[in-house]
Image 1 (tube, rainbow, N blue to C red):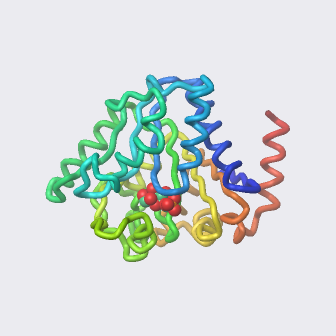
Image 2: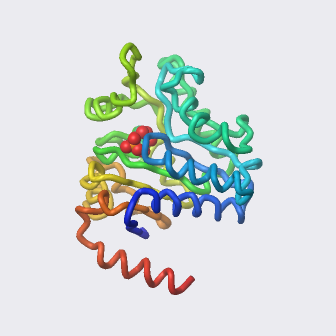
Image 3: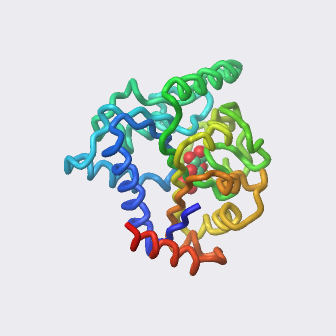
Length: 259
Ligand SMILES: O=P(O)(O)OC[C@H]1O[C@](O)(CO)[C@@H](O)[C@@H]1O
């Protein structure tokens, strides 16, 4: 696991976008795993800048989003399909047919949706790079604490804390879903490269548990310690509870020298 700590969230976003763009310059038809939430918004803005400058094209890219709320149609402002169009897809040359979400309008159909999502990912030969945020409780995707560390795409009930944290994004009168379809932890772990980004003090405890804590379903992100190729980009605030920052910095300096 490579942990890189930056002065602020803008630098995290710039590095994340550069890593995605570098992959696309080597493999224009890459398969990307994408995340929603507030954390990746700045990264998407940096990608849009790169696209406008002609530095990157998404023409042949396929994407798989981590999760989607159950019961929300794509024109619902709270759906992650809407979010992705508003934050990224509408501003780049991606073909919407190549973007995928685990859409489940009727909870009773969850199993079929899950199997189908896994099958489409497999048909694309898997995910080259999976972008991840992290929940305050250590969730990745919507794999809440206690999720099986080997889980595949499935229906998840959201925890009270996740519902409360995300309630800031819902306006009065909007119904907040309490269930979501999410890639499983095993699905995420199958990606060739995982890029976790976290910013802000509110994520410090989850980041510490994920990187330096014991591997446990109590902090689903801690399973990333078992993945052979993970890059973690943090700002100073989200890294504030880490013990080994001096070591991470030395590694980052040496990697820079080698490159
Ligand atoms: O970036 P935020 O808004 O803190 O969200 C944290 C995580 O929760 C989720 O929204 C749940 O899927 C993730 O996509 C995200 O990484």
